Amino acid sequence: MFKIIKNKGKIVKAYQLGSNHEVIKKLMEQGKIHDLGEGRFEVYSQEALKGKVGGEIGVGGDWIKVDGSGCPYPNDKKFFEMNHRHIEGDTFEQIPKVLYAWDKKCEMCPEIRFLMESKGLKINEKSVEQYYSAELWGTTEAAASDALIVFYDIQYNEDGSVRDAEFNFVARDAFEKTYSFV
Image (cartoon, rainbow, N blue to C red):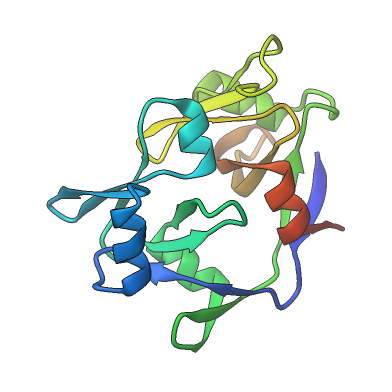
């Protein structure tokens, strides 16, 4: 594993699910977000499209950002608001925070083993396009072999073993635009 940080002061646009915002409406018209009713939404991120099962499930109040390929991806409301500073309108600054990441070039580590044993992470060495897969955001997400696994939170037991971890896949092109190595 290695340490990474979101690029300092990165300015992003974000939109709240469930709002009447023009960007949310446009993404819905394009079929990239589906309203499931009862405050639930299906969001078709790059990783959800590669998973070929369905969109990521978000709820009203969660935030949506759009990656460089034009695909939306959800951010949990609490996580988003803790890690972004509102500037004005739809514009936010990402608050830099050191995180950990792993890719296939790294040695197996306890954190990845935990994800495989407890969080459903699968590594398919026979597929370049669906090298990584896991159930995330209520759907099967998949990522290519050059993607990274980014850990947003890792909790350890007193003995040093992994108790829990929050993670997601980040496509290599999105990673290179968004993160730097520490």
